[in-house]
Image 1 (cartoon, rainbow, N blue to C red):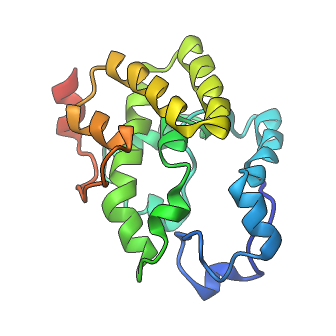
Image 2 (cartoon, helix red, strand yellow):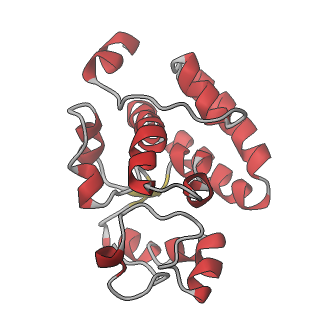
Length: 190
């Protein structure tokens, strides 16, 4: 996956995989690039090459993917994308991790479980119409994250998701620490 460099050279050797917005490894230009998601634009090259699609579960670093439950591994069966429901809900991931003594642990306890559930719900409900809606909502999130989250809620409700997933995706309350999804959740929803 091609990305603009927003961190110092060898950042992966200096710290963990998860990055808070105040991480000292982010360069001055990198803060700007990340704030406006410009580092994601170059991934259009990956879309043109056929390695990624516009919409699909966001690719993860190997260390995070190695922790996947059997259910989460379903995310690896589809082409990764530049955006998905979790990209809208967690566009402020760096802010969520800000101030954490262990951003990787916090990511795996309160972000990954919800991101995975949203990605799996997308996989179960994907269609051209859903993809177009998510692209529009991603663009809307740049102008107004609040409006994008409200519109996303109606899409997610149409998928008959667990009410707790809907609550967390609304981002109106603090994220709960929760275990990653397991196969019984998927079977129970069907």
